[in-house]
Amino acid sequence: MRILFMGTPDIAAESLAALIEAGHDIVGVFTRADKPVGRKQVLTAPPVKQLAQQYGIPVWQPATLRDGKAEPIFRELAPDLVVVVAYGRILPPELLHIAPLGCINLHVSLLPKYRGSAPIQWAVLNGDAETGVTIMQLDEGCDTGDILMVEPVAIGPETTSGELFEQVSAVGAKTLVTAVDKLAAGQLTPRPQNHAEATQAPMLTKDMARFDFTQPAAHIHNWVRGMNPWPMAFFELEGKKVKVLESRLAEGLPGAQPGTVLGLKPLTVACGEGALQLLTVTPEGGRPMPGTAWAAGRRLKAGDSL
Image (tube, rainbow, N blue to C red; front, side, top):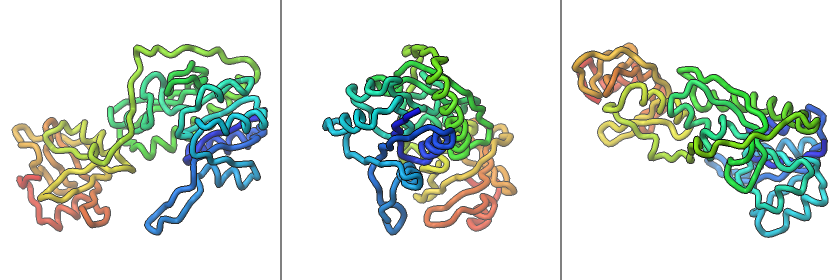
């Protein structure tokens, strides 16, 4: 099948690679602009562009899709299908129906749950036991199109957003290839979303990563997992941030005030409900270290308060 692919980050590159390996003819790629990366701010191509260039696939990086310049490119490429995976922009109406099979999108949640830019993170933040991928037909809304195919993915109690991202990326790429084949064979029936059940998954911010020990341990544990690898959950101590990279739920001590150190091996802290082990932390200006080592450096003892 002749496919025009639109995507930008690693998850999109994994899907593009799967389509190439499945033997589809990728007639072109649209992706976002190169960006400065790292401390030295080296101008770096997005993963999708790097992969496309390895295979000699033409690449376009328009600053906008709303100036009318993309439409003639679409028509000249004459794709059977447009596939969109984390491209980062909503397609204008004039581009949605140029390909005979239209435009389909891979979204990393079980729609209509978690529409928006951070569905993986919010599934973890909310302590969900399951998420998944949805292949949908694009329309003029944001993640509102008809559902073509879904594939669930279990979320472990210790799974971080970064780990779940890798799992979902692999499942998504495989599901996308299957959906494209079934779509070409006329074996998929679009199913409208129940918009009344829609929930949102807005982009995370650094300020959202803050927690305090008056909150339930389960909530803080989900925050630690959901904010990893970015922006990393943190609490403040004496005006300094302490990021928590890894945690584990623990038994609380009846009557203990939130923030009370209950034990040091591992570092265990009382919360509003229950207690939490701080297994790996990063003090402000420092490097990741075991919570026990950080506590020893501060000469904490049982009964002290964070």
